[in-house]
View 1 (cartoon, rainbow, N blue to C red):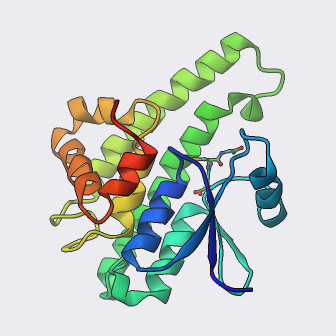
View 2 (cartoon, rainbow, N blue to C red):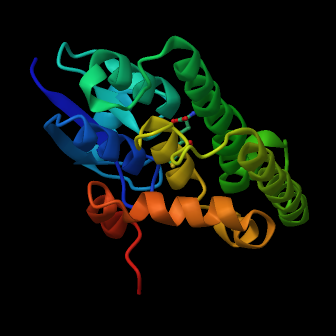
Length: 212
Ligand SMILES: N[C@@H](CCC(=O)N[C@@H](CS)C(=O)NCC(=O)O)C(=O)O
């Protein structure tokens, strides 16, 4: 086995890992795959991740990494020169906390909003609508708490753009979170725009979320 393989899709969480690999200067093979896109990519993805979720990253030894926060933490620890994670242990602890916060709270809420039928037996259209409405309100509250808890100095990662900036910027793209944050936490909303405009990652954001 050799090299990294990233399974992902346009506008998905794989954008955060793509940006992290780019910041770390790591070459990778990209496979277009998603559970909602039947095809050869999905068949290949299912072989390495039984949940068929993206991002999934296959490492050079052939082992599979899933879970966005775990992938970013691994890349940061394995490639310290990338600045994906702070070198100071206490600063790094807060970044790891932030990454797990986004994955466990915000990303998980997206999974319910996208697939409410997975979380309620015999869900009818009205049930799904109510699950989506409640989960979306909770998601927006979770982002408000994130913005109040993780200060920008000037980046969420600290002095340099890193893993927490990437994951927060990508996961806040969905389910009306940016629109909500523009009103509720304008400084945080502006920071997210600054992160995605950083020249090192701007082409990736532009490709995943083209401005029409
Ligand atoms: N816990 C995972 C969640 C990943 C996830 O839900 N990814 C979405 C795309 S953004 C997905 O693949 N959903 C398809 C599905 O669950 O069937 C992580 O943090 O990476």
